[in-house]
Length: 486
Image (cartoon, one colour):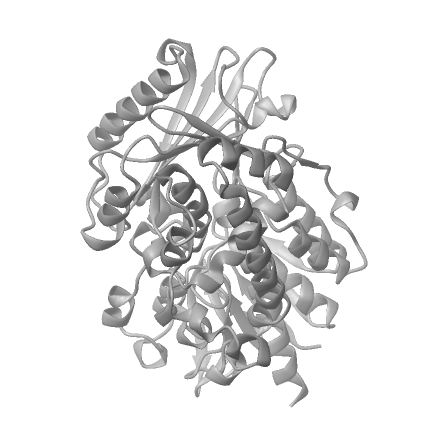
């Protein structure tokens, strides 16, 4: 039986491991941290349960398809609830509440801009068509050739790859609040709306059409489910085992070195940060130079605050976006002129509003996120400065005092992303999905210099986000098993 070593245990690694084990290979995972999950880790402290990374459950169909490939379904492992409302957006003088169906959302749009619901329905219908093409066709290609993108469906939509989300939204809607609401979902793809092809409007269908969900117990329940599935399939999982070197003999994989010990294998799949993975190779076997990595456009990093409150909060929902400052200016300070934002937008998540198991009785679990440029200076003083900015704005916009109610607080930022996840420049979401970094233009799933070395994750195909990471693992496993059959 051929053996595969998988480096890392995030979504893409666990996905690849499951598919490879199902194909009959011997699979062993090596994870540097104490628990599986990578960036999707969990912290439990003083009765508060925090998802350390991903907190939005979108595209439930992708999770259903993943588990169905193994004769399972999500409900075999965790309880899934649709959120209503899905989320709330705060502006300076108003807020928009996004319900769990188009009727509710259209009513809210018409409240903000009379007659806008008619434009919204047409926009979402087009987004739904794009979603079907993207999810069922485009993202299932391994990014080996530009010809993968040439289909009847994509050719008839060619203009959508050269127009942007911003252009598409702004020709239909005038109100800046609605524009921000419709441009926000592509931030999950890690790029400015003005740089993201309009074809990616499929994210708006993922939002308004498929809704926002919550796995009871938090997003880490998905990781636990995948870990259990992997072990049921025979995958061996090692934690506290950092990979120090990927071993190559005469241009072909022969294993890894971890903690001074060589472990022999026929294949290696790395779902760890792609740049870091290549540093585990001798220089002659690396595909991409340091100048290549430095020249890429990355999705943002994040300043995160995990906070336990000793009371229930008011005037907020499970998911909340604070767009009371200049959306465009913050984007410029992430992408165009990287710097700490002058007036940051931020996101706040209170899962205990929906799920009482995630906080002690009468308390609230809070997760606050400020998107920032990767590679910024990260000091305790800067974290403290932005904590005060976020808490003061949050208190003012939700009409409540919160600082005195904080009984637990932890911050996480650029240097933690580097230390915990070997993240290039401390990015949080991988490489942005701009036109020049789409499909075959992203780093390859298969090494061009080392036989039997493969990669998965958000720096490669298809891109950033949890559902794409699941797909990435599947694509890598399919490439490897095809290679095995040759």
